[in-house]
Length: 260
Ligand code: FPP
Image (cartoon, rainbow, N blue to C red; front, top):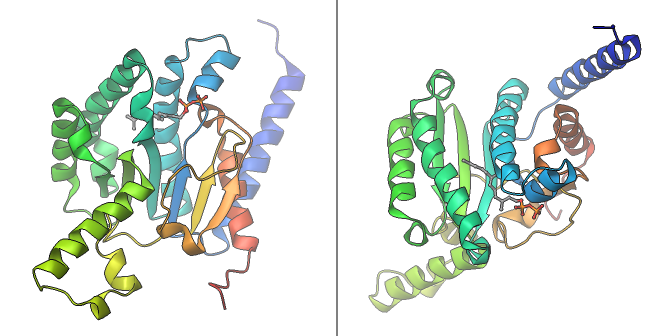
């Protein structure tokens, strides 16, 4: 096979650029918690002539890669928005396909050597009552196998809706107020945060969305109050390490003021 010199040179330049970005990013504090709205699976697949559903498999593979990048960069907590409550209204074949991916991959993740080696605790945020039984069982298996870890965290928002999460917390508060367990003055920001599905997870420092869409789509509505936002114009399965590193570098250049 002929050697493509120009491709070799451009690959080498690309790798040098990537290494340089890794150095830059590691020379400053990295965000503790990065949250990602993984968007564009179907468009990615269509853009390269594949069936749209194949895009979700590519999306799953990308998530594994991004987790590796987080470990390398020192990002301790990664949350991904994998399936919204609204996504249930997609056609039955697609929802079934994604649910099968969840069931298979939570089982696999629970047994995965890299998860145990790196002590990654995996949890799911969302309305489990909306999920098929085999998905809930796979999630419970994976959570139980990783619950003792606290070095890294991977959270998957599945059957998740930000408004639903807030309403769920409010319902609990109203019940507790009615039975006299809490008084109105007990309810401050910290107290309320502890009633959300993210009760033991710090708010995200950086929220990133792929696919070029610049909206939040009902994700982390309470938690995003002081998050830095970053939008990147590539579909999720096409998200490259340099896109990830640039997002972190952009975060590092910003001056966070928390309203002060
Ligand atoms: C967004 O792209 C993606 C989803 C709604 C599904 C997300 C599922 C995965 C990434 C698979 C993760 C799997 C595991 C096991 C964690 P889209 O379908 O909205 O694509 P589009 O914007 O091009 O229509």
